[in-house]
Length: 260
Image 1 (cartoon, helix red, strand yellow):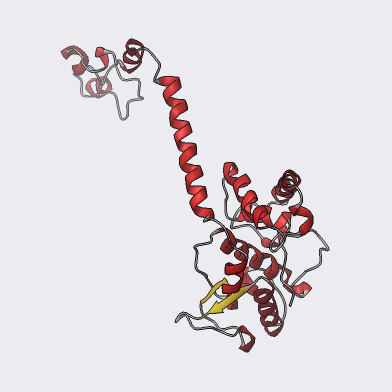
Image 2 (image 1 turned 135 degrees about the vertical axis):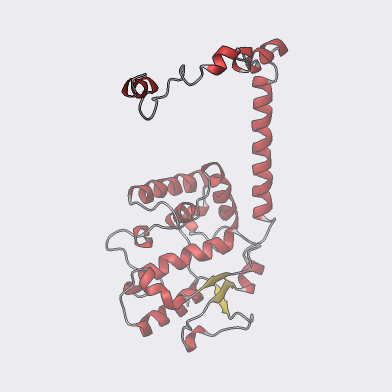
């Protein structure tokens, strides 16, 4: 089984599905571009600016197709008539979904695994085929995307023996993590980037408002005394001076009915 190589639409779909903030998209692209050909298609590894433009083009396509977030139909990731690269054509939605899961494990390097129950996937992903064929495609997806499965006791689970109706721990293989995901911790670099962004925003805010004269700031914060103190007469007549529509029968009408 050949290892699957990701393309620009896969990266764009990951951004949409997992809600990557717009200001962090370039950092995600730079990270996977630095990994290079072991993960990314070779034509996309030659020039970062071209790779970036390809991802943004696919982002627009996905947006136009209604692929917005984790509740989107994964069938929107593929164009009409597109052929499956890992699975049988009947299970192309499984292929699309598992690519998103594998990319999530690549981008979140310290995430040890995700819990998946494959038994319920045909219904949720809109897959209409024999369950035996679906099980065969699960095995092919896991192998092609460099994934491994373990049971809840953390023992290796051979999916070729059948897909169980229980949660399995799906993770990247140890060999893939050791040989492909090298370099610094991506999540830590993102955390630093977020902190730097907040620092810049604070500095900009301080430059804009901190240089304002004290008297001017005091004037902006000043609240008219009339808002705090009312005369005795104003407090007594507050119900009559209210702009709100009164409820019930007016008091004068009640008095006239009573003959007073």
